[in-house]
Image (cartoon, rainbow, N blue to C red; front, side, top):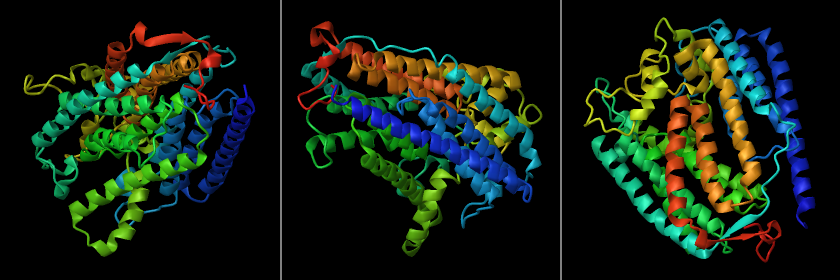
Length: 500
């Protein structure tokens, strides 16, 4: 009961921040509209600002929590539609990146108007579906479960074989794609322009165990009374599991996946043992940004052989590349290219890019004619003319590619309702079984949202189900009735008042 004023204060601060963000993006939208009168290219920032206004609206609810999966939608939109659209409208080219080469492909602003409207309608539909029924209150389930130490010990022991399986999958993946070398840091540059794409989906699937192992260890350590410090043995163990979890994303040059894997681990720890961590949150964000920048810098240097004295400038540009000058985060421009390309350049797929994920775990050695699972290479080849890299379409582009405008509306509404269902699930059960719930909620709700926004529907369904299967198996193996005892909500605190 003593923490109630603090919780109310935090909620009021979050509400004030949400109102501030809504006012900021509203003013940006108005300013961009005036800017549009003098520069037609300002239409990108005008549309991007409206997108940010749309996704910010749910944040002004008094019951909103940062642990909602909608937070990922907001972050992706702020980067992919807000910051990126401003860079496009302001013609902010860099020494190594061209706005036209990355996003416009020689097209004028009028080329993007109609598909941008479709994108905005999709966001508005998803937002409305997420907020429908908001007045209905979801009461937490009374009572809770304390997990005994034996549960945590078994959980950590189980993480070891999971990590080993994931690491072996990565080693096999690296061997099949040319081996690991800093001279060819990214797999994207190991394929020649005439080589055939092979995603090795079965190895990528098995490598999911590495992320699961990291999350399991993070949950186990967070649920115990000892703090995890960077210099402690627990900190080193957690760091090793984290490194093992992101080695595959680093190798395949997927900066977004690496950062979100680490971020989800911290979210799991925060769900189990909430703390007020404004400074730590900033530091974690800085570390994640530095990680993305370092990955981009190493890949660029390995490819171009830049000298060491250009490192500061290269790292500075890498930070911008990691957030703005890329085609991640489900940006409006990529979706616009997909919408304009269908059906003249790329025919409607009628759900095939989603359904094919069912056969992703089947090795290509067993099925020579196995279709390409990831839709990114298709988009990269037909729209961007790339034979080496893929471009994720995001949920709007993926839905339009498969089902047209009607599919975008229905799909956006379904995604919004599913995210709302995830949030109700958290409100109802988060305090009942903190460890088990965090290990099910984050790999399901957050993995689905991140993949849907950044990649597409098929990747979202497949990856979230894969992680859910792994986590459910872990909890089923170690979680028995004998290792748990039921307690009242008042007992769900340790001697220093922190929730277990």
